[in-house]
Image (cartoon, rainbow, N blue to C red; front, side):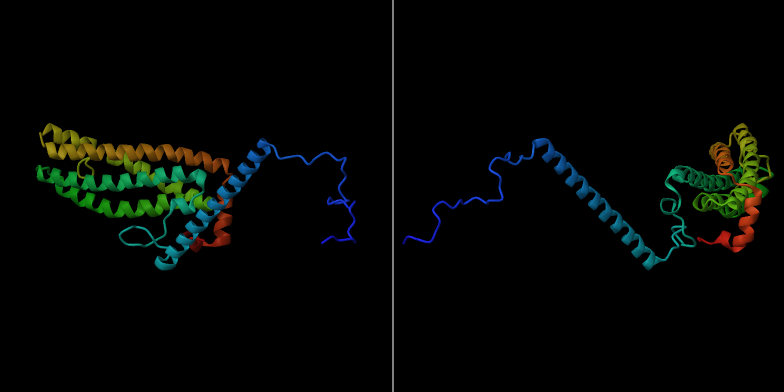
Length: 262
């Protein structure tokens, strides 16, 4: 059926379009690739944010269930996490100090075993060596952690001057103690160099071997701590920590603040 009212000259194209305009440009392959790369980068960032959010949620859930205490592993007394509490740039240093502390603990145990062997070998001072070495296992393990490792851990975590001064004071004594144990004078509780030479001379091979291991252990942790002591002192100086600043922190926060996580 014919529509007599329609305009046979009407155009099917919009009158808003200029027929003399250039045709619209088609996207090039390079711009398409750039857009794809941008979208891929956005997706990667979204996935990274989702991963981090999941990690934080897992940590929060773990803290909710188990509390903040996670160390030592066999009986949780305190919270200790280099990954979570120490700034990224300082984590390798604190990790090495923690490893040196573990070497110290292992050396104390080996030293005690060596003193047992020295006693069995018939040494006149063997009883005193064994008694002192047993005492070292408990006292040095605890005091070294509390008096020099934990202060420098907190020092790098909070960047407060007083922690550094505590570390320098007590780690300085620990370095002197390490020299004392390396020498190994009889009746001092050390199976160090002198004791080890005596055991080799008397052909007490088991005691000599354990004494050698103990001497190496004392030397490794002593030299390692001396090396990081100098490095930490340089950081402390560069950071501008002073005794006046330490006194000011103590007056502001109080002594209790240095035994808390805040």
